[in-house]
Image (cartoon, rainbow, N blue to C red; front, top):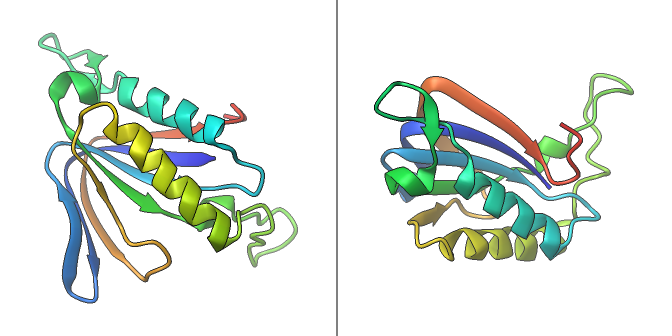
Length: 149
């Protein structure tokens, strides 16, 4: 499972001119589900994301988590995080989970985040979405449940 985590002052997902998820200060998480991902991968990433210390403390050091600031989390499913362009210029998505498996893992991941007590919004699975955000910092972190990076 892969995630691009961005520290935001606000973020919103729109589907056909309808806002389906929005947060103020917190994290925008773009989530890719891989073919071999399990609930353990989702739990690991959820726990890691909730505890990431990427918000500034009173001294200006990145020392606080989204939980510490009581921020929101907006999760958007993004299978393209598994796009592989090593073999050419057109991405291969062979390592991405098929939609029928990815949906369940995406929803399980969000459930794990919600157990933290934080407000967690979602995009719409398998929809064309417009994602708007204001990245603070900018701060962007890449995570992989296999700890590849």
